[in-house]
Image: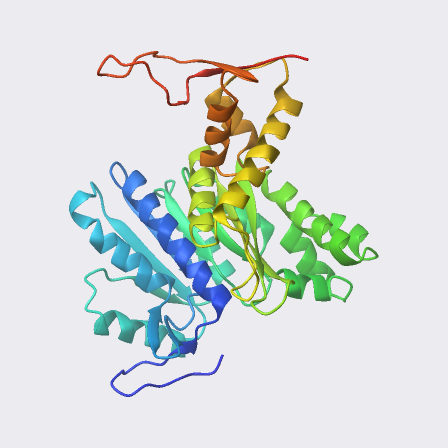
Length: 364
């Protein structure tokens, strides 16, 4: 990446690409909630892996990268957090490290990160080897330029209680080199040899198979895994996927909502140059799709609302709010809802749908 210097700043910038911008927006939205929810009861760790330059320019506008965004979020909530939040930055490029240090000083941030110059995989495994006890709940943002990520390292990370990963799966590069002489690297990436069967497939089917295989492997180490497609900003073609790994369905639900907030209610980034249908059109389409999906899957069955979410939240392209709103539309027609408790604290009949409520789907 070309370094951009600007008068009055003792650090350099990178050009802010649209896909990087949306990635940071989503990260910021989600990490803010992650800190608030888990920080009340736990000391937390945040690992920023492949941290980059830390600063970006979009025309005359200045933006900051994930290490700085994380520190600002932590300081914003500091008074309400019960425990400390530690930041660890892993970066191989010494110039990037020095740049990030200059930015922290310039921004006068009280949070002082631990910065490690080194290879991500070696560093993480060294830390895990030395940890005598389980680490505190930890959020890993792994954002490499290439794809030398080892599946078994991700598996070790997800063994940490309440850990989560936001991972950049560099699909364009992986797809390009899938047929080349990179067998060991690809074996380590996928954690298996099944990728070899995909080399002779082409087009959209190949992309779908690659992503499905990787998700299948990640589901062996995380309860909820969802891939977010990121397209090139100027054409309808996949650049990379952001995979989110978590152990709680609420984490998956919140991440989906965070992504949709910055993508016109959708859960993929197709770039600013692509058209988007209106909110009302999208709502009608989603409601119809969700209704048909639920009726096919649960016709004649009873299902607790929380169980319904657990079974579907990381396998369907719908938000939790979309599912809940559709169920409300279906109530009294295709479904009945038994609410527990039936009344609100003020004694009124409850109309909302909550986790313990039982949804009864009509039969044929």
